[in-house]
Image (cartoon, rainbow, N blue to C red; front, side, top):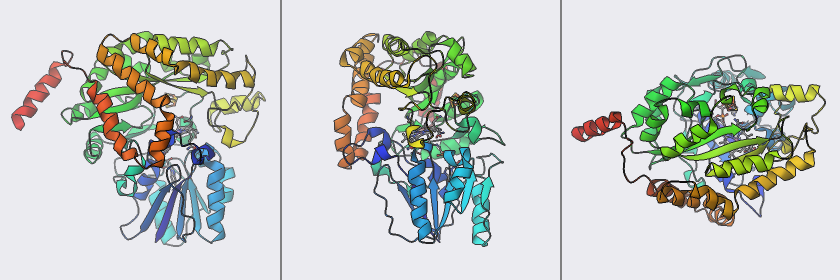
Length: 474
Ligand code: B12
Ligand code: SF4
């Protein structure tokens, strides 16, 4: 059977004038996961429109499209195009799960939720000639899933081909998050076995890894066993975690020993009433500054995530947040405009209150205001968001942030890392167009590695013992 798998891009990523680096970071792991259920005889062409021009002249037997909210219209356009040729179309992913009634108009079959249980069922039905119109995931388990098809990923088109995901979902329940809607009807947080994860890591060449899990630290036992298994693998890695996880005794130290060098943290807001309203209870009463110090003392860089536009935010929120982030020495920040995704409790509340301003999904990209904010106008919110980026990434602010670091090494690393993300956008554009991204990974590795600590007095006895025994074994 001839199969075409497509990750469509949002309009911005296709601009002939500008290719932001963020669209060339990560390969389509979701589709590569689904692909692992095909048999070796099936001919699979996996295309990611963020990094390549789609070949639309082919005539596959089956077209599979992953739909995110901001690529929904493009996904539907592609689906229509292939349908006119008589190809069987299936759609799955976050947006299909949130709005199945909308998506079903463009597909022969739709999938709700993660695909590990439903996809093999569909394949059997499809081959037998009686596929159903809709499959809804209920059994959540990664233990029996085959390893994802990395051979289908064009590694040279990504800055981080060594992306990896070893769990699904997250143990928390924030109001604005996609998660509960997506995992409805079954477990909403589960992991691979530690052995599976370690085997997957072994398959990745080089040193550098990026865990794309929503919350790698969400199951403390799994995380502890994983990091212990990674000791001695000589990796360096980045991931996402929470303040709560950072403050847990010992876990962070072990993560650092196994190679953690940079962590994405959802601070979201500095206002406790906002946290309460968004049900982000795991951030409540947490000492943000203590968590930051802990990370910095262990040499871990921070990418702080902040959301603007919650009901307690007025126009002072931008300056307060940016100044705080700079004063804390946070290396990089990602700002978002609060976005009520369909299917979330936040969306339902906004809809009930008559505050949804548009249902044009292209604008649900966290850079446009799609709802009526409580304490400012939509225009003020949007302008403040852009201003926050400008203010945070000014050279003077980068210097100020770097100056909070206690060692020269960490100051330099701060400057190089923060500077290269936002100040070198034209350089990244040039690298992407010249297909030179693969050459950048070793440079990224050495930025993280080159400014690595020179001495290791912080190493726990655990690691020292492990290293001794590893030397003994070799
Ligand atoms: C990598 C990533 C990106 C990459 C690109 C996506 C990619 N390469 O896959 C980039 C950087 C471009 C990106 C951008 C954005 N992203 Co993003 N991204 C992620 C991230 C961190 C990992 C995705 C991943 O690999 N997951 C692991 C794989 C295994 O899961 P999966 O892709 O969902 O696939 C599973 C299922 O969805 C399902 N499935 C998917 N497709 C299909 C098809 C069929 C037929 C079947 C059966 C099943 C199926 O089965 C798969 C296996 O279980 C997720 C968070 C997360 N942990 O998922 C956020 C996430 C998807 N992003 C999000 C957002 C908001 C965005 C942006 C809109 C906003 C922003 N400011 O960045 C933009 C625009 C996205 C776009 N292109 O339209 C939200 C989505 C919210 C929503 N309701 O859509 C998420 C969930 C983050 C979050 N916690 O809020 N993103
Ligand atoms: S902690 Fe993050 S991933 Fe988990 S529910 Fe909250 S926003 Fe979603």
